[in-house]
Each structure stands twice: as C-alpha cells, then as structure tokens.
Image 1 (tube, one colour):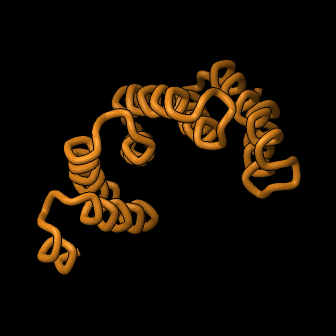
Image 2 (cartoon, one colour):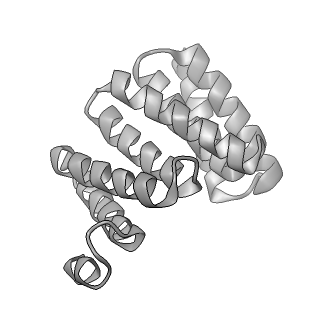
Image 3 (tube, helix red, strand yellow):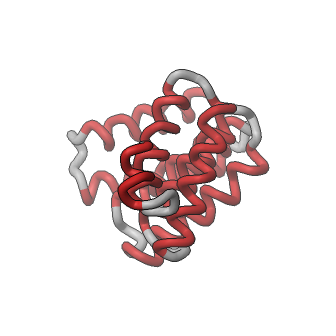
Amino acid sequence: MAIREKAFGPNHPLVANSLNNLAIVYRGQGRYAEAEPVYLRALKIYEKTLGLNRPIVANSMGNLGNVYGDQGRYGEAEPLHLHALAICEQVFGPDHPDVAKSLKDLAQTFREQNRCQEAESLLLRALSIQERALGSDHSVTQSTREEFDALRSKE
C-alpha cells in the first residue's frame, strides 16, 4: 500500500483497492475495530474520486456494513446495505448478481435482528436472481439456497 500511495498519492482509487483488501484480511481475522477505519477510508476515496453511484462504492458500502453487522451495529449496517442495494439496482437493473449480493448482505443484517420474514423475502429474491443469472448449480446460488433453507428451518 505504501508503494501505491507513493506512486499515485494517498487518495487514488488504487490505494482504496489496497485498503479494501487489507480490511478484508482484518475482517477475516475478526479484527473488526481495525477493519472499520480502513473500510471507511477506502469508501471515502472511492466516493471522492469516482462519484457516489458507482458499483465499487456499493461494494465498499456493503463491506463496511458487514463489518458493522459483525459487531452487532445493525443500525449502522442497514442504511449502508440499503444504499448499496439502491446503487446496484440503478446501475445494473433489478436482476443482476451484484443486486443479489446486496440483497444477501441486507438479509443477513435482518436475520441477525430476528427480522426473519424480511430476511426470507430478500433471500428468496436473491436466489431467484442467482438461479436465472448463474444457474442453480453455481456455488453462489447454492450458498444462498442453504442460507434460505437454514432461515426457514429456524422459524
């Protein structure tokens, strides 16, 4: 990252990519307090340099929302996931796999708050998109189906 900052400056999208990757590693290690400011910095760079309604901004918002959710901060996670979903729907249309990913992220936030009916509806829509776009045998589709089935068995 230091090399990219030196080569491109501290506010370049390639720096944001490196920051996002670092935050992914932190989150994967359960180091949420360290991941959060790194995700925030990446998001700010993307918004400032690329604009607000870009797919990479939606992805970054979703990542930040996920780390908030990991910490039980659902009130902060939900608006990020809603905004990311709105961007994806605007950019890609309602039936794109990135829309399905945003739906899954929002569903997870709802599920963790025991808002199971809302989560189920979102997962069902995500599954429908993935089956059409990716096929029923794709690993992403299968993962969503498993989440949906697990949620339904929880009720």
